Image (tube, rainbow, N blue to C red):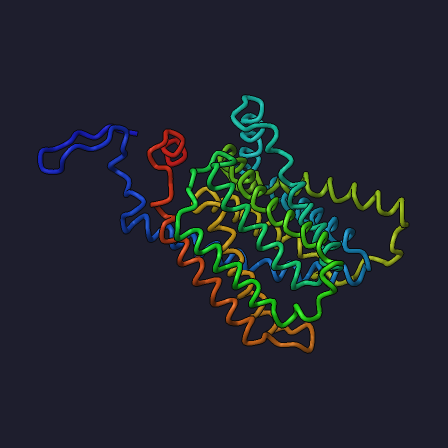
Length: 356
């Protein structure tokens, strides 16, 4: 960074400010911030496609844990093949290893893939007890809470972003939107006493997902490539889920179903790779909270589009679901007003390092 010299007309400037780069409140930075938020929305639209593919695989295998393990393993294989043909990605993986050896990336960040695997486990277990509606609301609440805490504390080395009024209002709106969008299915949920613990598990899984995004962002920054962070995530997650599946198979026995012959049911790993890689790139630019909120908006929009274009059941999206989706976009707009500048601890040395 360069130190500017104050002119008589402009008044004094703070030392250490890079005057060659537009500040967070200027039009150029605002446009970039809007593009990053839009990219997060599009990234979120991949999640319902992945859920539909993994759900179909789980149904055919009659084993949700096996489906999650196959999805993660498939993503790991695809990324490994990509690394074999990409010198740039191999260089990023070597840079990631060097960052760990030199202490620039804490070793405790490496098992971030377990957090993603935990969320996949919750989808395949807790959701069966709570129902999709309760699971979705609980997971969104966990993601929102996690985003607020991770951003406020700067976990993962990101820029600290205080939970100011617009961010808190946006978080509240998205929680209300999640409940409204799930209302048509909440009537079919089991009795409250039977879903309390699984719902808490879904909330914890959502919180861990936000933490995972921050840690993946740190790995991407250390390696210089989100693909390296994505490869590490899938490697760790696949090992974790295969171990869990092996334990389940030893206790309960395998499901006995043959692997499906249709190739397209195995594309969930590819969708997961797109989501994790894009999230690792975006999290350092818009923060965990705004990334989670924009992703949720994309997920709801993608789910509605899937239900309209490729329906999987008799029910079509209800007006309440459409209203909830619109509210999520309003929540993202509210939160992003300050997330692109005002809420950051821009005066701290850590914030300046993250921007440089």
